[in-house]
Length: 156
Image 1: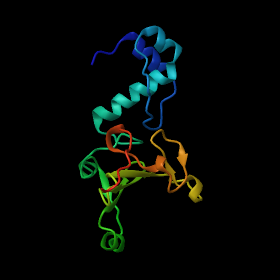
Image 2 (image 1 turned 90 degrees about the vertical axis):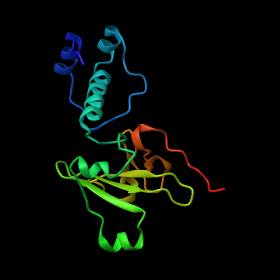
Image 3 (image 1 turned 45 degrees about the horizontal axis):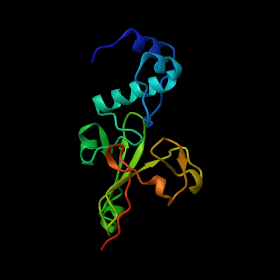
């Protein structure tokens, strides 16, 4: 990947994002990049996340065991593992970020939940795929792997 002067300028004149946020229409031309500098910096960060396997926000792998290979730790409580074998909780060593993986069950597709570590109530317990706090038991809390839209399936 070739780094251009525009990319360096965007990098030096914008704030570093803290997590992956989906950008629907990334800037393509230099003029668009100048007009939407923070979106351009977010896009650079997103590419970096994908390239180095830094899973955060909605960019999570299809195979949840990939998290273990990338330095995450399985922190599922033994009692929970026995009572609910379809759920696995992972914690990132460097940042303390927590995600919970749910395998496919009762017609609901496999998905993740991204925990808000600073939550004090159920009103902001999880993050949605854009990194915004979200209420518990809402559809937005279900994160499909690899930044796809989560599709609710019913068992037929």
